[in-house]
Length: 128
View 1 (cartoon, helix red, strand yellow):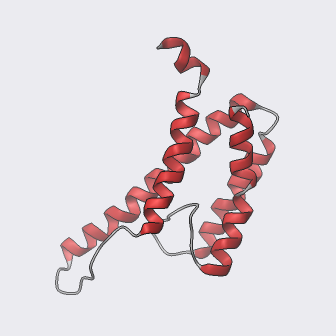
View 2 (tube, rainbow, N blue to C red):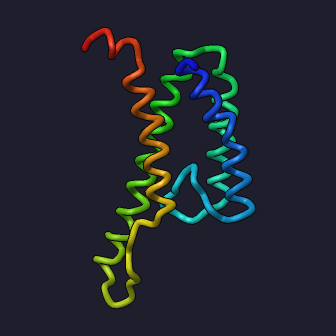
């Protein structure tokens, strides 16, 4: 199975992640640092549509995958960082902070796809 096929299956499986989130409130696809279910569904819809449109263009699909995974990791980092900053500003009314197992699964999923897309890039292989 080539790299583009894996990426296209990853993006075409986005409705499965959306359905899982809708039914069980377990979001394995993206971690937004702010509340907003509609933003999660919009993000998933954009990923699904763009991933589907780029199936026939493997290079653009790889570039989109690297960009999307980078944004996803940024959102995950912000979802951990923002509570830490808010706790530091209001210590008396704070709750414990921790990265849940869902956050770890999100990180592993997105990091694997990002690394696979980055190191599977022919331009990087040619220069190393």
